[in-house]
Length: 117
Image (cartoon, rainbow, N blue to C red):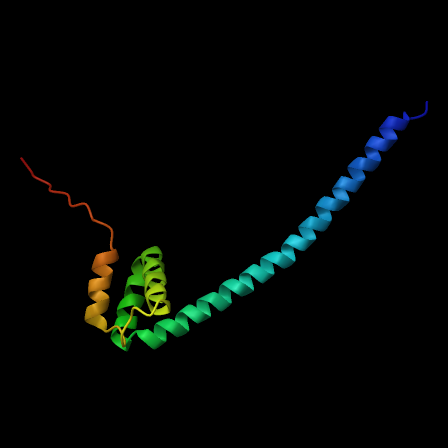
């Protein structure tokens, strides 16, 4: 019993589609590496800018925040970088200024009042 020509054509199309998907997957890997390299370059530029605009005390305070709240510290770093790039930072940010910046950017915390009866 011979195969139907439509079945053969369908099999050829499936094979072509599979090859295309494999090619795209191979290209996606290279693109992921490029994205990783670009991410690392951006982080290095951000670190260099933070070193330029933050005093040692402010950097230490930011590092302490990063240990406990990495997402919040990332947000603060982005904010400081954006301020520096826009030219809105005059001089360097010291520890007291960093404290006030952290308070401004910190989301409102909910306080719980526990009463015992």
